[in-house]
Amino acid sequence: MDTRLSTGADRVKAGTLKHRVTFQSATLTPDGQGGRTPDWVNPTTVFTAWAEVEYLSGDELIAAAQLTAKSSVRIRLAYRTDVSVKQRVKWVNRGVTHTFEVTAYRPADAMNVELHVFCEEEQT
Image 1: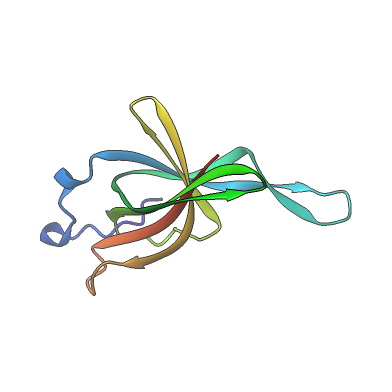
Image 2: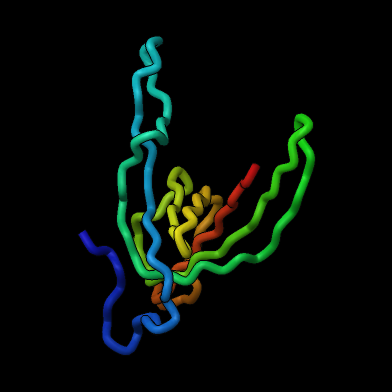
Protein backbone atom coordinates (compact mmCIF):
# COMPACT_ATOMS: atom_id res chain seq x y z
CA MET A 1 0.00 0.00 0.00
CA ASP A 2 1.43 3.35 -1.01
CA THR A 3 0.69 5.93 1.69
CA ARG A 4 2.39 8.95 0.12
CA LEU A 5 0.53 12.17 -0.47
CA SER A 6 0.36 12.65 -4.24
CA THR A 7 -1.69 15.68 -5.13
CA GLY A 8 -0.07 17.16 -8.22
CA ALA A 9 1.85 20.36 -7.42
CA ASP A 10 2.02 19.50 -3.72
CA ARG A 11 4.51 16.65 -4.30
CA VAL A 12 8.11 16.81 -3.16
CA LYS A 13 10.59 17.52 -5.98
CA ALA A 14 11.67 14.06 -7.12
CA GLY A 15 14.99 15.32 -8.54
CA THR A 16 16.32 15.96 -5.03
CA LEU A 17 15.52 12.39 -3.92
CA LYS A 18 18.52 10.58 -5.39
CA HIS A 19 19.11 7.80 -2.85
CA ARG A 20 17.22 4.49 -2.69
CA VAL A 21 16.50 3.53 0.94
CA THR A 22 14.73 0.54 2.49
CA PHE A 23 12.82 0.84 5.77
CA GLN A 24 12.87 -2.38 7.77
CA SER A 25 11.28 -3.75 10.93
CA ALA A 26 12.64 -6.52 13.14
CA THR A 27 11.18 -10.00 13.03
CA LEU A 28 9.84 -10.96 16.46
CA THR A 29 11.34 -14.24 17.64
CA PRO A 30 10.11 -16.27 20.65
CA ASP A 31 12.51 -15.80 23.58
CA GLY A 32 11.71 -19.12 25.29
CA GLN A 33 10.01 -17.40 28.23
CA GLY A 34 6.67 -16.62 26.61
CA GLY A 35 7.77 -13.30 25.14
CA ARG A 36 9.30 -12.18 21.87
CA THR A 37 12.52 -10.36 21.11
CA PRO A 38 13.37 -8.28 18.04
CA ASP A 39 15.58 -10.12 15.56
CA TRP A 40 17.43 -8.09 12.90
CA VAL A 41 19.03 -11.14 11.21
CA ASN A 42 16.11 -11.49 8.76
CA PRO A 43 14.26 -8.15 8.96
CA THR A 44 10.95 -7.47 7.24
CA THR A 45 10.96 -4.82 4.50
CA VAL A 46 8.30 -2.21 5.30
CA PHE A 47 8.87 -0.16 2.13
CA THR A 48 11.53 1.08 -0.29
CA ALA A 49 11.54 4.71 -1.43
CA TRP A 50 13.58 7.43 -3.11
CA ALA A 51 15.05 9.80 -0.53
CA GLU A 52 17.87 12.20 0.21
CA VAL A 53 20.32 11.04 2.90
CA GLU A 54 22.15 13.87 4.64
CA TYR A 55 24.75 13.51 7.39
CA LEU A 56 24.19 16.18 10.04
CA SER A 57 26.95 15.51 12.59
CA GLY A 58 29.36 12.90 13.83
CA ASP A 59 31.09 12.01 17.09
CA GLU A 60 33.81 9.60 18.07
CA LEU A 61 34.07 8.06 21.52
CA ILE A 62 35.94 5.27 23.24
CA ALA A 63 33.72 2.72 25.00
CA ALA A 64 35.01 -0.56 26.41
CA ALA A 65 38.44 0.13 24.90
CA GLN A 66 36.98 0.35 21.39
CA LEU A 67 36.69 3.42 19.17
CA THR A 68 33.09 3.99 18.11
CA ALA A 69 31.89 6.55 15.58
CA LYS A 70 28.31 7.77 15.73
CA SER A 71 26.68 9.91 13.06
CA SER A 72 23.37 11.77 13.01
CA VAL A 73 21.50 11.55 9.72
CA ARG A 74 18.39 13.17 8.24
CA ILE A 75 16.49 11.33 5.52
CA ARG A 76 14.09 13.38 3.39
CA LEU A 77 11.33 11.58 1.50
CA ALA A 78 7.79 12.06 0.29
CA TYR A 79 5.31 12.10 3.18
CA ARG A 80 4.16 8.70 4.42
CA THR A 81 2.30 7.43 7.47
CA ASP A 82 4.01 4.05 7.89
CA VAL A 83 7.30 5.20 9.49
CA SER A 84 8.09 4.19 13.10
CA VAL A 85 10.93 4.60 15.61
CA LYS A 86 10.93 0.79 15.84
CA GLN A 87 12.35 0.65 12.31
CA ARG A 88 15.76 0.96 10.77
CA VAL A 89 16.84 2.19 7.34
CA LYS A 90 19.21 0.38 4.99
CA TRP A 91 21.06 2.41 2.35
CA VAL A 92 23.67 1.06 -0.05
CA ASN A 93 25.97 3.84 -1.27
CA ARG A 94 28.77 2.98 -3.73
CA GLY A 95 28.82 -0.64 -2.56
CA VAL A 96 28.89 0.21 1.16
CA THR A 97 25.82 -0.75 3.21
CA HIS A 98 24.76 1.76 5.87
CA THR A 99 22.23 0.90 8.57
CA PHE A 100 20.48 3.72 10.43
CA GLU A 101 18.33 3.41 13.57
CA VAL A 102 15.25 5.67 13.33
CA THR A 103 15.17 8.00 16.35
CA ALA A 104 12.46 10.49 15.33
CA TYR A 105 10.39 11.66 12.38
CA ARG A 106 8.16 14.60 11.53
CA PRO A 107 6.43 16.27 8.60
CA ALA A 108 8.65 18.92 7.05
CA ASP A 109 5.70 21.24 6.42
CA ALA A 110 2.04 21.79 7.34
CA MET A 111 0.86 20.35 4.00
CA ASN A 112 2.32 16.88 4.73
CA VAL A 113 4.24 16.88 1.45
CA GLU A 114 7.64 15.85 2.79
CA LEU A 115 8.77 13.76 5.76
CA HIS A 116 12.03 14.16 7.68
CA VAL A 117 13.29 11.00 9.38
CA PHE A 118 16.12 11.44 11.90
CA CYS A 119 18.47 8.52 12.47
CA GLU A 120 21.74 7.47 14.06
CA GLU A 121 24.44 5.32 12.55
CA GLU A 122 27.01 3.63 14.78
CA GLN A 123 30.26 2.28 13.38
CA THR A 124 32.77 0.26 15.38
